[in-house]
Length: 62
Image (cartoon, rainbow, N blue to C red):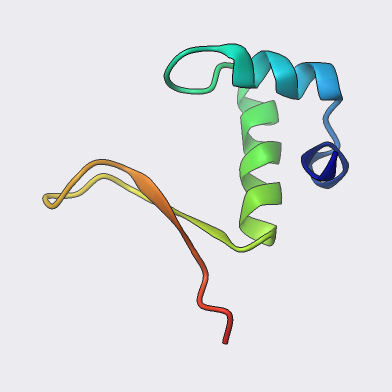
């Protein structure tokens, strides 16, 4: 419910995106809305680098 409200996407759209195996499927704009909502909630997306694959972490709550 929180992600529906924060992203502005419908519950059914988010459920379809979550139902796939592997990388989330969906239109680029929808993926961007989800990423923006998660970043606003304190999630940082990390790119792959020489030390490992892509990932996420929480912002420092300073």
